[in-house]
Image 1 (tube, rainbow, N blue to C red):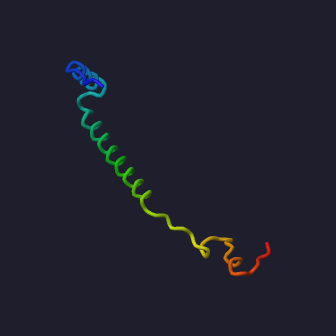
Image 2 (cartoon, one colour):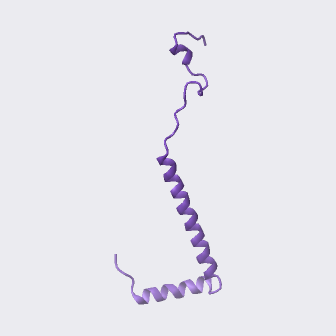
Length: 77
């Protein structure tokens, strides 16, 4: 990938100034910064959730479990 030339950067800055105006640029930059901060924290939370082991439900926690069948008792439906 090529590095953008000085003229391309100048044209880009002029287009952004024309589109947003000099007064709104700080607000736009702050909004983008906050959005990136939230996005990074959410990604970090998702990866932390994946690393945490999920607790497997036990027979007493699952409704309709066949725990009585395992002890030799028979259930009728």
